[in-house]
View (tube, rainbow, N blue to C red):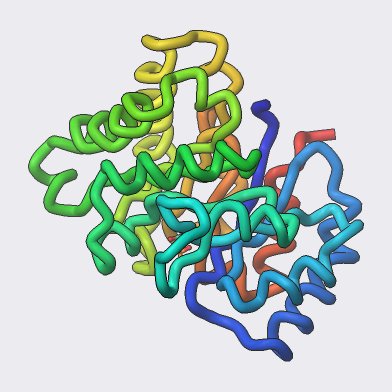
Length: 253
Ligand code: 13P
């Protein structure tokens, strides 16, 4: 896989009118960008709208979560099968907000990851440490635990069809970005950890950085050797910012 990918995570934001305005501004600017991929991960109710607006454009779409089970008696849940039905290419799995606010365990995240793969969706597996964990010097241990849960469930080969996003929890929505050096160190650790299981898969694995990425810091972050693009929260709700971030992912001419 490799090459760069920029994915917007709209989180629980948007409405029919604002989504349409945002995508209509983005499509003509982002579709011609070559050498880098882009996508938006949107709230479930807007998947039909987004599919209709983005079909045939250069921008892929996806969801922000899915159920760990397939269709059945799970009131309020949304299955991988349903996401595939709406043309999703990606689904975010194990975002820190799912883990901390909704209590998702590593085990549940691993099941969700395998559900995505089952229907051919590309899971974007989020990993990252809290500020307390970073200050306690256990960043690598936390990320290893989060990764190993998924590898234990699906096998390292499954990462050939997946994307990983390193999102330090302390950098999400705080305006406090990891420096390119701090992020690169963790990205390299993730790649080494995967390489211990399969070197070729590690070499091809896209590892995105997420946490207060803006147009003003994206180029520096994306320039680090193991940073293969970004998972963008707040800035993905602003067309000009998101377009500028996508341009930063283009390979130099
Ligand atoms: P912000 O870009 O708003 O910090 O959010 C990052 C994020 O959580 C993306 O998934």
